[in-house]
Length: 152
Image: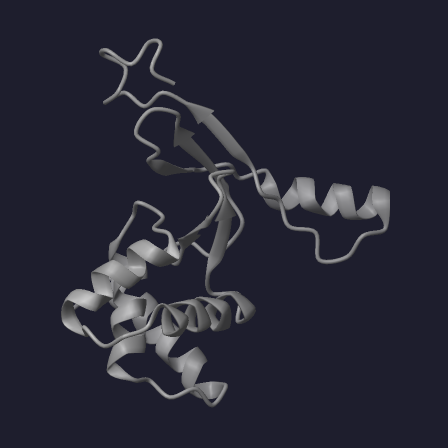
């Protein structure tokens, strides 16, 4: 029986957490599952709301600390969409571009293969280390294009 990409990704995250000495609590597992299932690039508050349905006593601090750990492990991409809060991508933690709808605020991945090459060039030119591209485009998504003029 073949293991899905999502299941394999979950196993990888669990192994990485355990290898660093972190306990896998039911709440932490639920956070991981939300991050892998939700392709909308949820905010911490959105992750919290989804996990809270299963675990009403979970705190927002638990969500933030788990997000921080995953980010430190390189298993979570934090996205600044200039909305006053961050969004998170646990499905594709490697640097890649994003596009945000100006109307509905949805965020989608952009398959830009040049990000790593560009980061290396910037590092070589500037002397900076650990350069990571964070590319964000904005526009109006196909779903919102119908009557969106003037609403953005």
